[in-house]
Every structure is written in C-alpha cells, then in structure tokens.
Length: 248
Image (cartoon, rainbow, N blue to C red):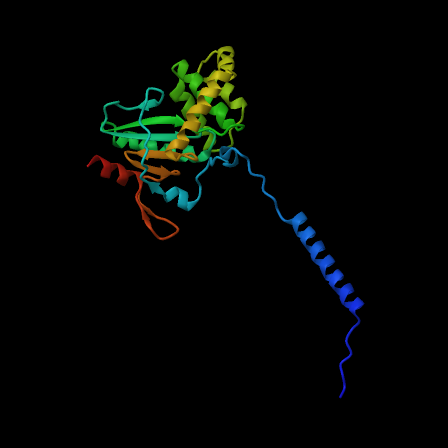
C-alpha cells in the first residue's frame, strides 16, 4: 500500500508565516487608502449650510413643523401688520434662487394686497458674499432705502453673480453717503447680529434659502405660483393654491 508522503514540518511553518505576513500587508494597505472622516466634537461644525434648494425634491417639499416662526419687530415687513395671513421668507440675496422666488412674491403682493403680509429675513453663510449682501441691505434700511437696495441686488443676481463692488455702486445710485455706507458695511457688530438671526433659523428647520413659512406650512425652494407635477409625478400645490387654502 502506497503511503502519501507528508511535507516536512518546517515547510508548514514557512507557509504559515508567509500567509500571516501577506494578511498584515493587506490590512496596512487598506488602512492607508481607506478614506477617513474627521468628525468634530461640535456637531454644528460638521453641518454645512445649504444655500440653494435647487433639486426637484427640495423645490416641491413642504412640511408642517411643531415649532413655527412668528413675525417680529426685527423683520422687514411688507403689507398691513393686521393682515389675515402671514408669510415669512428666509432669503439669500446673493443667490439667484431667492431672485426667482421674489418674482412670485411680487405677484402675490398684487393679488393679495389686503389679506397678506410678508416678513423678510436674511439667511447667510459665513465666509460668503451673502453676509455682505444682507448687511448692505440693513445699512440701506437705516437710511430708508432698504427696499430699493434689496430690489437692485435681486435684479443683479437674476442675471449674474454678485460682486463686492456692486454694493457701493448701488449705494451711489440710491444717493447714499459712500463713507457712511462703507462704515456701516464694515460694522462687525451688525455682521454678528445678522449671523445670529440667520443661525436662529435652524430651530425652525431652515437649512437653506429660500425657505418659506405660510401659516403652519414650511416650503423649501423657489416654489412657483401655479400647481405643477414634480419628478416623482406627484402634483404639487403652487403658492397661489396654498394661500387661497389658508385664506378660506
């Protein structure tokens, strides 16, 4: 009877060593190339604010929040403060989406002038030109030129990107004192106040601009006036339908 010859014990040890070494090398390579994510201890530092709700889902989404903002003295208010229905808009005047929404808001002002009031609030992203845009409008409001300044910014962002030199150009156009305006625009306390107002929006679920609150409904994105069908083939209410429903 033939007996299979067994490999020497030394060969088994060599192959075990080679296999273990290969496994260690593979684990080291995976550790080096695998993407590592650094997570801050402060959760807010890891949440990048959204400044444009340009997806179909964001444009069509609406929610009912448990905590809703209320119009306050700090808001720039259009319309009768005793109007039946209030609308609050968080806007980033450096972005075209807020400019697009403003066209709808202007039409709503005409159609519901006696029953609608609109409160405008800034939504800014630190480190971006949206900070200066919001502060420039605040400085113009001090001189009772805020609405005009805001509208000029909107006209710019609907056609091109906003530039830093645009602020002084608009100020000059509106007859504002350039030195006073520049001093106001550089006021760090005013910038801090605006940042706190924008940060305060987070408790209402606002993470980007534009965001609307109509009564007890939150609407993300530049919602059009008329009803439409979204990418999921769902029928979505336009601003006209929502306001008519709220006023009934």
